[in-house]
Picture 1 (cartoon, rainbow over the protein chains, first blue to last red):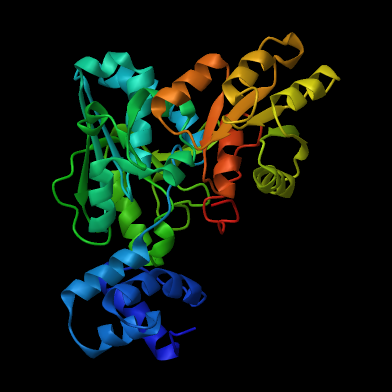
Picture 2: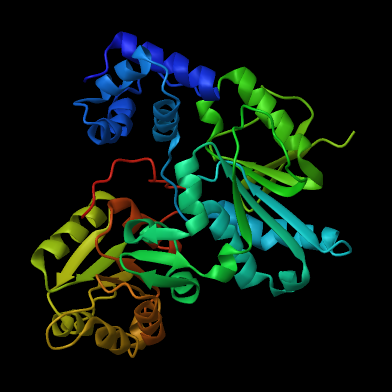
Length: 274
Length: 136
């Protein structure tokens, strides 16, 4: 390991201050794996040298790269599958019934990464809900990491990424091949938007949503930030809206006034109606 | 669960076999279409067949069409596993009767995710955070 104890502690404190992310003491391997490519780019020998460069001088560009490298997450299409079944079979139909007078639907993928979650929803809506053609549909993805957002906006995915959970019928219907990449159709791309946002910072310019997906991201925050983020996510819901967390995550113990509903085996959260 | 891996490359059969066995799937192999048809005609009814596209004599899509002629295999899922990755070709394979499609190279977790899509592997086995053990 090239990252020594002091480097690691510095990085923990840096990530905590910059983006409220908690880097566990057992994550040395992650630091090595994520920072080694930056070291190669910069002509440095090791991940440890990247951290020492960061310690030695203020370099906003390098700081951004380190934050991005440490927060980039693997993602897959229709991740865990079951929540998407629940969304398709019950959540969206219920929201459509409620919103039919206004003909407006808003969904937020709050840790959008390279966009697979939001595109999965966009593909599902196109495939199963033709009624939405005449609606104003806002599909918003946000992430802290500019590089992943750029990739998400481009809608370009490698074969390895396409393999991860995207049904073949959807590849055939919605994607074209450009060299080694698969590109989602311009029509689907035009229905989503991706914006940079730090969940631990101020939430600016977001509409109210009918469905918020905040999955597998809270693990990076400490209890107080988790609580604040959950509170704000619930406040960001339209009346009757749903919050979906990662399968192993729960707001209980952090927040009061939350109620849950189990739909086809997936738990969704919403604000308790007084 | 029982899978039949049809690929003329021994190393690819071995890679897929290893991934499938690692999750408890029983695996048989066939080196080409004729071999696969001989095995199913001898009474084998796999839950899923993983079929390469480019094979000598009978290509994978032709094999898929042949397999779909056999009523006893009605409940068998077929996944193409191939370097052919044009969306149009995926459409051709689906049209012939394939249910899923995996593009080479692939990772072990992608195999499991596709089996989940086929309903052949239980939900909730999220492998996305696991190390990539699969073929490159």
